[in-house]
Amino acid sequence: MPVKKGAEIAPAKGKLGVLLVGLGAVSTTFIAGVEAIKEGMAEPIGSLTQMGTVRLGKRTDNRVPKIKDFLPLASLKDLVFGAWDIFPDSAYDAAMHAGVLEKDLLAKLKKPLQKIKPMKAVFDQTYVKRLSGENVKQGKNKLELAKQLINDIADFKRKNKCDRLVMIWAASTEIFMKQHAVHRNLETFEKAMRENHKAIAPSMVYAYAALKSGVPFANGAPNLTVDIPALMDLANQQGMPVCGKDFKTGQTLMKTILAPGLKSRMLGLHGWYSTNILGNRDGEVLDDPDSFKTKEESKLSVLEYILQPDVYPQLYKDFSHVVRINYYPPRGDNKEGWDNIDIFGWLGYPMQIKVDFLCRDSILAAPIVLDLVLFLDLAQRAGLRGIQEWLSFYFKSPMCAPELYPEHDLFIQLMKLKNTLRWMMGEDLITHLGAEYYD
Image (cartoon, helix red, strand yellow):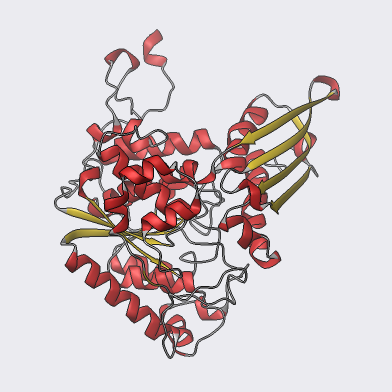
């Protein structure tokens, strides 16, 4: 539900609890990074909320404040972390095991990281076949498990004296699922939870518990989770903002940068071949065909929406798009993505682009988590509810209203995000027309 331009935003008083589903490479890199930044050991590179600016008014006005100075965002010093995981390791031990960050840095952060011990997780190996763990909740049905999560949320908020909470799904990709009849409304959804219906995945149980508890929810994986009618109804009833899905890092980030450039210059595409190697827990999970199917759907949709073959058939009709992910343990979190792009230009003459992106998945994902935490909290305090399409900037498969197609173009997404921030604060939107400079 939209807020009026310049509507009052409740102040960011007190502590903001960050509840992470999954205490693996992404979550521990995020937590350790925030702790290091708070201690002055590092800069928040990659975080729009911390390093980005927003232009206000005309170019000649020279009003370009930092986003964190322009908006009443929560301060990093007020963040408190909690998590669920199927392994009982503390955030320190989990970070050491993940191997993303240097041991010397983790040693300096050992004290705060060791304090974070994961709560028992809601987990079912049916949905993530390549993982198993002992730190798992038991219950007679999925509704009872949801109630245990609701109790966890309330206990965490009370023990840590938090004023507000945000929940982020940063766990592994679940198997591919389609919407089912039991997802159509809250009544059928809760009945299905009581009956342990297979169409209710663990991620949905977390989203339900979050929304029931009055906690905004973001889905960082491509699973079908909060994007079903029952949970969208619950989000709107509870006045909770939600967003997703699948953090935009690595190869897909490159696609949403390059593809708009090709389209803007009306260069054609014969084919785009993408392959990845990675060796972290994510790679192990995606080695299962059912989990890979979920990720593949997310990665494949990007080019179709950006290039619009129906609108530009001479340029993009029937282009070939292939995506592969290979689990290669020696690589760890240091993913490598190769892209071979066959394009054509004037008079149909062929050309090629080749990209070899040696990236660190969790290093790219951690600032996304930070921004989503702060922006979802801001959205809640601004009275926004339901899908936050302005946060599409951060996702491979952005959620949007059912009658819309998702916007994947990174530059349009950023314009939408910054205009939303201007709108919230009562500033004029920027169209980039600029005619007034030449009158």
